Image 1 (cartoon, rainbow, N blue to C red):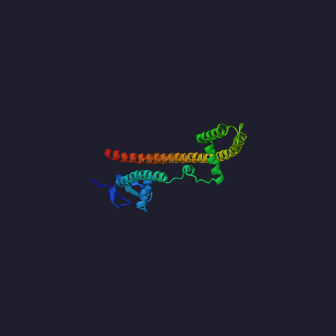
Image 2: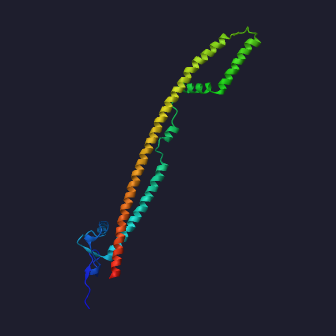
Image 3: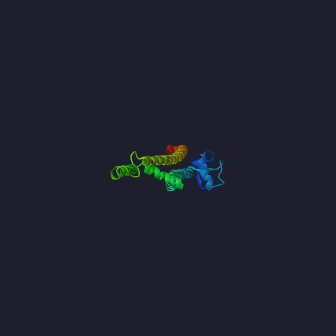
Length: 233
């Protein structure tokens, strides 16, 4: 009964059956680099046992799974960080400082009051009292008898002053609306750019996962082929 030929592993120095020899040049590059990391002297001309190769195959698969979990954890952290840090223009639009001058504040208040029911009712009461006091109480011989020339003068002055003040307020509001529209455009532009960046990151992540999964499938197929060859022997 002849002795079985053996070989010495280049990484462990142990003896293994010749049938279990695997040359370094036939090992997949990803697993070869993993072995090289532990044994720098190992090269393509070296050889290891199939059982040793399976250990590194399992390490490679485990490392891939850990990296996937790590990427998901980092993604979760980045999402939480982005939620906690407000870098958008929305808060700037909603919480912008009041930089109005005294004249602009007065114009806004006059425009608000002039366009309210309070002004209409108050002015109607004032005109009614003016007419009643001159016609009824003073028998149309008061300070402004019919046809109420003084009242018409007052109304004309109020209208002449109120119109430009309201226009000042409207012009400032239009300027504010233009600024808000500009900020809305910036928000939409930033959202579009972030969506594009996110789409590119997802494409890169999918391509990376597909390549890694294909590599793992090849490693698993090699392991299954080794098992089938041993069963046949």
